[in-house]
Length: 185
Image 1 (cartoon, rainbow, N blue to C red):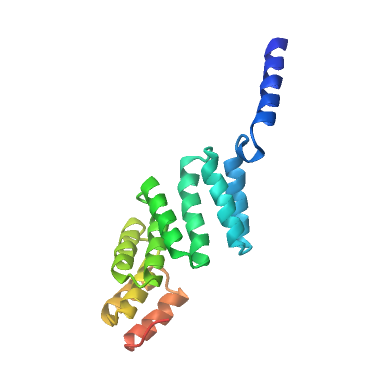
Image 2 (image 1 turned 180 degrees about the vertical axis):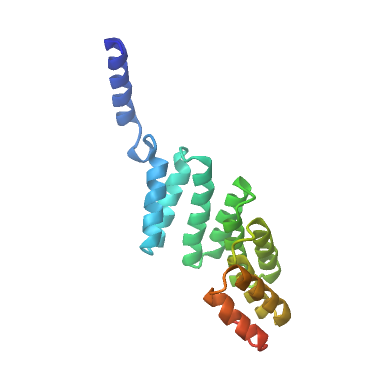
């Protein structure tokens, strides 16, 4: 590199460090994404929401991380029982990647918690179609069928989940309750 190029790079670097606030500096999105994940693991849901928001707003997250950031922020909102914001984030993740089974399943779980069983069943069904090797959508749908007292359908879902994961505790307990015509928990 020529001395002039080096001087120009130094000047640009100094200008960026002076003019750009630290949270908007280069490649801050991945750092905030990582910090959001760490905060969530510590059960600091407010911190997770803050960091995922900064990651989303950074404008420098790669596409897969962007829809994961919306999904993960939705998980933090759901953990705080802010279901409307969680639904918004899951829906945004699904607009960015309509084939993201995890966000579809998570949205189904929130609909179930809100008592919107038809939407929950629709999302769980789509998640199971998108990722047939994941038993959790089937388990979630089985629990919704239990809530609706459709125990035969619940047993079918728990059986299908057990075919994928024979030791999944929620599938085992759900099947036992549903086959006895009892409410699943």
